[in-house]
Structure formats: C-alpha cells, structure tokens
Image (cartoon, rainbow, N blue to C red; front, side, top):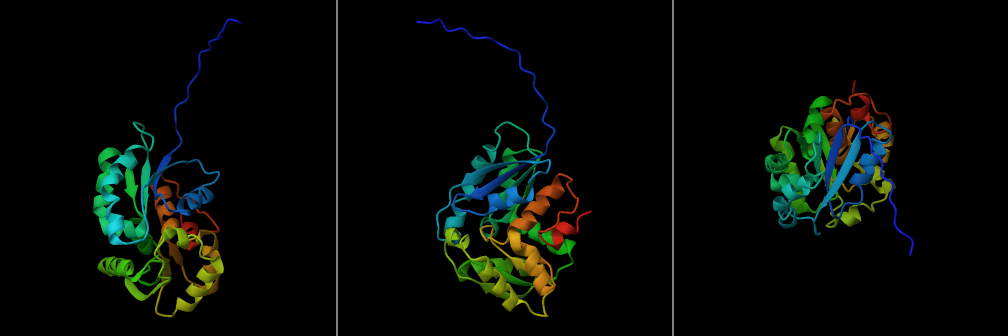
Length: 252
C-alpha cells in the first residue's frame, strides 16, 4: 500500500470588512430570502439566513410558539461572530409576540447589533415618505388582520381601508399570482389614501412594486421592501436603488 504524504502550506487570512446582515425567516416562507438576495445582488453586503420553526395556519397561537426560539435561532447565525444587523422576517408574528420583545430576545444574544422587523421598518418608512393615510392589503385571516389594524392605528397610521385575501397558510400566500395582486391593489386604491401597505413577508410582490406605483400614482410599501430598506440604512448603504419603489429610490 502506498504511503500517505501530505504537503503543508501556511494560509494567509483576510479581515472581514463587508457588512453582515442576518435574516430570521419562517421555515414555511418561500419569498423573503429570495427578495433579499434579489435586491442586494452585487452590493457589498453579505446575507446570512436561519429559519425558525413555524407551523400553519397563521394565527396568534402559532406565532407565539416562535417567541422562545428567537434567541437560539439568532445566536446560530454566525455563532460567536459579529454581525451588523438582524431582521426577524414576520410582520404579524412581530405584532403577536410584541415588537419590543422580539428586539429584546435577539439583542440579548447578538450584542451591538441593530435589530429590525417588518413592522418596525414599515413605521419608519411611513414617516420617511410622510404617509399618514394608507390602504392596507394582507393575505391573513380576519383574526390576524384585526391585530395589524390595531397596531397601525395605535401608531397613528390612519387605515383608510383594510383588505385581505383571507388565506390561512403562508405557503399558499407565496403562490398568489402577480396579476391577482395588481388587480386587487387597483381596486382598493382610492383618493382617501396617501399610499398602500402590503403586509406579509410571503407575499410575492417585490418585483412588481414599481409597476403598481406607476398604475396608482402612489407609493407602495411592502413588508420585505421596507425590511430590506431598513437593513441597508442600518449599515449606511443609502444610495438609491431603482426598480423596487419610491422608498428605495428616495434614499440619498
């Protein structure tokens, strides 16, 4: 038998200077990770994803089951390594668990890290674009929609109309036809609202935001769009990004 011989070489290592964004996405979400990667493609930022267990249907009971898993899931995004920002990718889950609680759980295990959620980012985006009156579209069942409505109103956002596809599984949400989303937003658009907010990270809408804005002549904000926007702002990546709506184009 031939003897094993190994040649050894000394490796040279580089320091990481590229900003790092971590994403906690639901195990059942088909959309948010793809949206992140499509929007930050070729940008000087690295994305690291971990999935948190979730079982449909979408309701408060199932959202709350994620609460005690948040810290472990966050900790296992580059364990022991520094990270600039972590986003928890669930709008209705954030409201069920509590926005402050989500941020607290993640911040406890990822020190000196900016933490955001879709609803955290949405409230900042409303302010950025001076939107006070919005028409809302979600895919959720009514029992979840009431929590979204209450949270927006509590934060001084006047909901001019609340509209829903009444879907219980986020797996189904990801399969909604883009034409269906466009036609629905056209029908809910009215002269009472300053803009439209589409809630749910599973909604496949990022690629058509600009098209919808051109049709309704108003800003369109979505859960994934605002979350990515807030993540990029947190790492001082403020240059305009075109093709994904007024919010990202407005950055300077």
